[in-house]
Structures are given as C-alpha cells and as structure tokens.
Amino acid sequence: MIVSLNEAAGMATKAAWGAGRPWGLAQEAGKAVSALEAMRLPGAQSLLNLLVTTDRLPCERMRPVATGKRIWVGKGPLCPVLTGAYISDGGGEEFAARLDDVYAPLLLLPFARLRCASVQITWDAASIVANRTDAFVEGNAVSKTVAKTVQITPLPSFTLDASKISHSSHWGPVDIADEIWEALSVFAHRTYVPATEASRLKGAGAGLTDND
Image 1: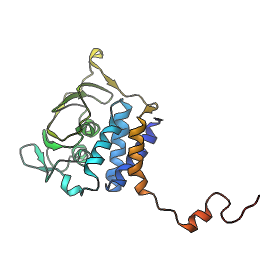
Image 2 (image 1 turned 60 degrees about the vertical axis):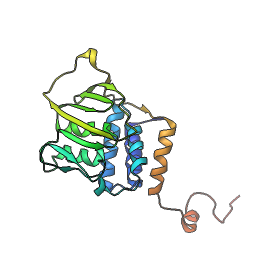
Image 3 (image 1 turned 90 degrees about the horizontal axis):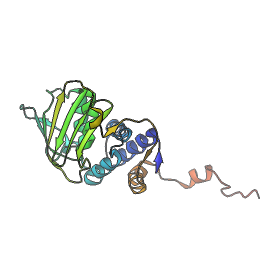
Image 4 (image 1 turned 45 degrees about the horizontal axis):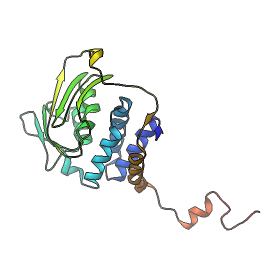
C-alpha cells in the first residue's frame, strides 16, 4: 500500500485510539509512526505489534515509574509511546538511561531524538545510532516480544559517517504492506460511529426514492 506520510500518521492515530489510547497519546503514536516510516524504518509494523499485544490495556499498567537510579520500570511492560512522551518532555524526572520491559522499543526512537540531537538505543535484538536525519541500524528493529532491557544513551551531536548510514529521512510516499495497513484499519474502524437508518437515508444514494 503506497501512502503519504500524512496518511500513515492518520491511520496510526486512529488505530491507536481504537485500541484504547487517549486521543493525545494516539496522536503521539501517529507522529512516531510517520517519523519512522520517513526513515524507512518499520514504524507501522511496530505499532501494530504494540496494539495487538496491548489492546484496550489501561495506560496505567504501562506507565513508566522512575526508581531514582535512572531506571524506569512499570507495573507491567512499558508502552513505548507513553514512555516516549515522558522522555521527550522530561517526564518530571532525570533522563532515563535504562528501561526495563518495553513493548515495541523501536517506537521510542522518535521521542528520544526530540530530547537528544543524537542518541543510541539498544535492546536484546538491535542497536540504533541516530541523529535527526540519519540512522545506523544493526539487528532486527521489529520486536514481537517484550524487550527486557532498553538502554538509551544521549550522544554528542554528530554527523554519521556516510558509509555507516543505513536509513535516512525522505519526505515522500512510503510503502506499507497491505496486511499491516488492513490490520491497522481494523483498529481504526472502532472509532467510526455505526450507521443508523436515519444516517443511511441522509447519505448518498436514492434512499427510498428512486429517481430513475
């Protein structure tokens, strides 16, 4: 499915809302997906994995809590979008260097880049070094299970060596797999108001009157 970044953000926002996220947090999810897809990183796939695993789970269960040791934990695995919002705005706490148990950790990257001009994020299966426009990714960025430990390391502002850049931001259309788009659409459809007989009669078509 070839879509614009705005369409990707819109679908991600509605899907997150349909899965039970508050509207503001759903919008943050949309922005994160758009930013990742712009770098040709699997943002939509990561969000889908998150929503399938945490469908309608209360946000309180996924909220980060600081331990005082630059470690954030939760009552259960952390939501990367909710945690990312805490990271990008400071969350009232010192920047966390380590997060324990995180769903879909790739979704943390756009938020960490807002807080740090350059950053390294590592977890069980992957390592990402990124600045605002480029990234070097090693391993599998898509996590279908909970990452036990995620390390976030702010770096001095730098320009990645061209030979080590694996992903760069491009503001054109992106290709999201049809099955991923359709699965996100299922979540998004929960936000639509069911049609009533009255609304159908007011909509397009002849209704009860045939003009032919």
